[in-house]
Length: 526
Image 1 (spheres, rainbow, N blue to C red):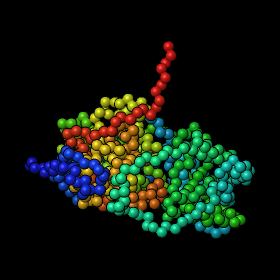
Image 2 (image 1 turned 30 degrees about the vertical axis):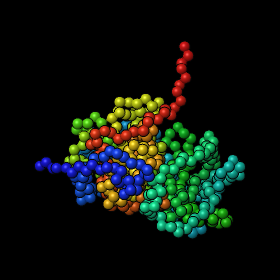
Image 3 (image 1 turned 90 degrees about the horizontal axis):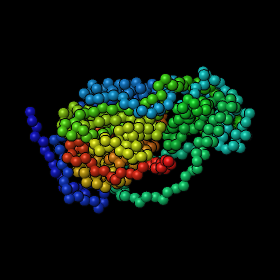
Image 4 (image 1 turned 90 degrees about the vertical axis):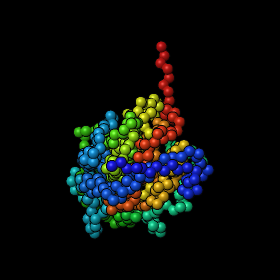
């Protein structure tokens, strides 16, 4: 049966006052919107959603997905299998072509006060730091080591000790709710273009890292059993920020076992030791390094296009996470939404003129490595800006990586020409709360790799929920923090944006090619 599609041609300027958008922008042309396709996308995405099931498999079944850990590799195998089951083409793990370094995983972390009275300590091993080779019972020493003078002060005093590396840290009450959705006023403010702020001077040639390396060498030489620090930074609402304390390069100098401790628990230890009360702690950390395969990959899959199959629309999210929680909001949420958008497009049977390609990136938490390597391999190297043939064939890239919150619009990354197009595409989603555009850039995630070589890459505006206040990079980044309704909306909107990008007559407008980031080489002397 042939279905007659309703095509809506929207005069863009008519919606400038209806939607939260870019002040002063208007357009004389119209943008085609396929309302029948949007209806089919909504029906599949809302009535038969699998986004939460996908997120559950990625998080609670496979656990955190630190890059090059066994957990990430297992989750990636499951993902390729699932994408293939959904009927996507060319689902595979595509190697970066560059060494990432050794993997790391933690199998056990127990920190328990033995004296003066027993109590369990909330603590997590920092990534790429060693274990304790079994349980160790040792005295705690408060030794804030911030300068060379501090190292001299504690020389000869740390052997066999558990070192508390910082002073007591203030815990402030949280008078405001940690969860938040954008208000209309905030979205209107976000839509206003701000002038660039004056640049600030740098912090010198790596002084902080250099001292940290010296301190680690000192702690190793002194024979410290383990190092404890407060893992605060979020108003101390129960969040423990963990991160990395060691190196992925097995040739780098060793570091001591390092643990991030819940701030309130750390403060109790530091106050007791600081006031002269002896504290004995049992520490048992078992961590493993994985050196057998130091290469990494991204996960890709496609829905082949029809008459414009050589051109590609991409959508993606980073697949990796930190390890204290299960990487739910950062970023199984984005991975599950983008997988669900692909499933919706495939299951709905909508005709796609361009090929649609999914990219799930690894190494994002270590510096956006996976997406940067993909862009370098397929499109261009920002250092030279020598573009490859595929550069001319990418219609656009859409990214999700700001937690579980629902889409409220799109960051345009300074791309003025795309504003009228996206404004039209958002009209059918006003009833889902998405209608805002901002010309501003947003950073810290994988669309930046595309923009760095002059491609049209975009990140969606999302309600913050508890992303920055509690969950981001913390032990509270767990499945229970996901908001199912928000993820369902995001998958539907993503699928609609990808569908319209795939079926436009022209690709999305681009900004001018950026200049190479590397200075040109001097000519070779004859």
